[in-house]
Length: 292
Image (cartoon, rainbow, N blue to C red):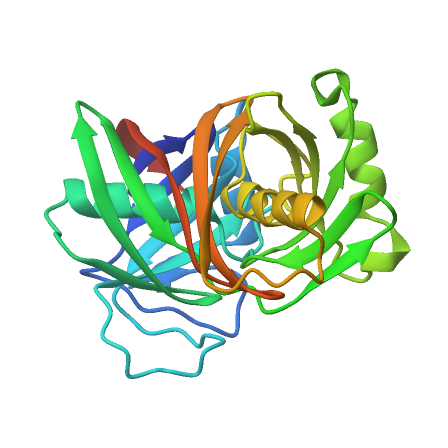
């Protein structure tokens, strides 16, 4: 049987999108999604994401209309669609910020003009900032961050929808991210599920340069939305001090990644961060059909 798909990328972080809104039903006790008689096993998701034997992608997303359980417990919140994300390893993952922007851009292209959606970490609101050709700039509201842990002398650990270790280093451009990222991703401190790992360098112009090793992909990706969000918050804490009160001030960061530029803004009240927004490109690449 054939399955129609759409390929999108956000700052080089690329995804397969399957639209199941008109024909979806999901078995939430299983690790993969199905609609009608279609069931995607973890093996099938892995094959679709494979860059040699499939479509290729850092992950696969399914857009649908059913509610899923989410951390805020608000199952009656009106939503325009729901998002389910699978890593390239075939298993369902935590929140993906670049994926959230891409699925919003796809929804806009398919005719929606409001973008409140549910994901595994809760409700997200998004808006289209601009559109030119196949590229759409999307501003995506991320979940609040209620706690941040200091880790070693140059790092922080926090959850921005996905867990992230942020380490500040010099000469990040020359880092062996694949090797060092795998070390920290599997470190006993983050067992049993592991963590995503970001290597961050402060730039002279006030921006930050971020390289991310993503669990589930098990390699470096060209950009990570939840990762740059975590890195921006960590940069603020590194420069201002984790105990310094900065009530309700708005802070903005420009972030450079190997795949392009993103921006993050947030407000903070002590150690709590809210009104967090991730802005960046989401680009339609192509669409097609695949036998599954």
